[in-house]
Image 1 (spheres, helix red, strand yellow):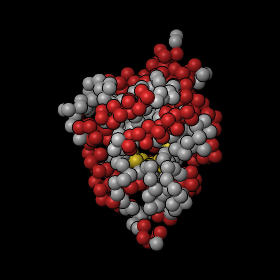
Image 2 (tube, helix red, strand yellow; image 1 turned 45 degrees about the horizontal axis):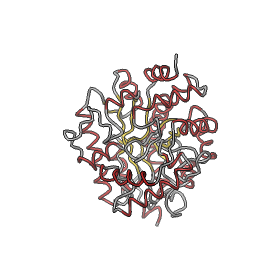
Image 3 (cartoon, helix red, strand yellow; image 1 turned 135 degrees about the vertical axis):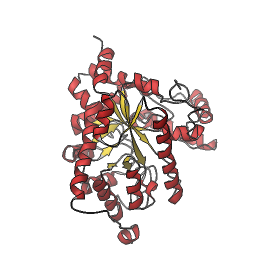
Length: 394
């Protein structure tokens, strides 16, 4: 039996839980969530990385849909945009009930798998989405958000980002309270995008397992968005999961400088560097034609997973592709149909079926269940925190 056939068989029983997909933002930008104009029940190759047929062929069983909003939105504007993103996901779930099942818990994920539907969870990408309000954090949880990335690309008042200057030096006192309240309500603390100081502070504060929804190994590619080995090693004791991303500029050293130049070209054309609309992709294509792009491959991603397994342990790794949140993808992982190619490469490298079941499904389900268990215990001991950033940070 060839490795790709075996990969499809494995995914049929233990499908991929992907930690991060930006389809909601892509739908917002392109058609303002109008699924009559962009129907993901049809193949949208060339427009999106994600649609229902390719999710099915890729062996995806659960997806954390990112309800990301850009970090240059602030205050109530950020909160409103996040609510619109949540509503966009809900519209998607209502339109495609045969394929997508809303999920709020680990049990919901398992139920959806039994029904051959794709469990759909939500993750908020950046603490700016709560506007320094623990009440807003709880409201997002009530609306179905099951992780929050503490920062996006910019610092916020209570946490430092990996891609900004030093601010509070990790987490402030209010930032630590945010983590404690996330533990209490059962929302996963996501440490992708945050500074290493923030990673360490969050791990020291959290009594529940944490996640990295879309980050890879800094030892393999020395990019600030990746996870250093000392932090990866802490996942064994914490119980968390690091979900490897596919974004070439985070996984392939040769792509780092090229992507910086491509981003500068986008900005010179008056476009945001994360823009993946057809207009933006034409600008990218013209730049790439003149400046050939270093191409990451399935093997590049597998190198990261090999190292992450060695350092963190096979119980603490997963997959978070970041499809529809990046202009460029590795060869062989061109869209959400590509996961079997990655599983085949790992089989080729000697990964066992039981190890791959942990990578694709079991670890992510376990970490959400553990967060739920911690929350139930904490809620017997304390009620909601109503602390403010002014009270704790002065």
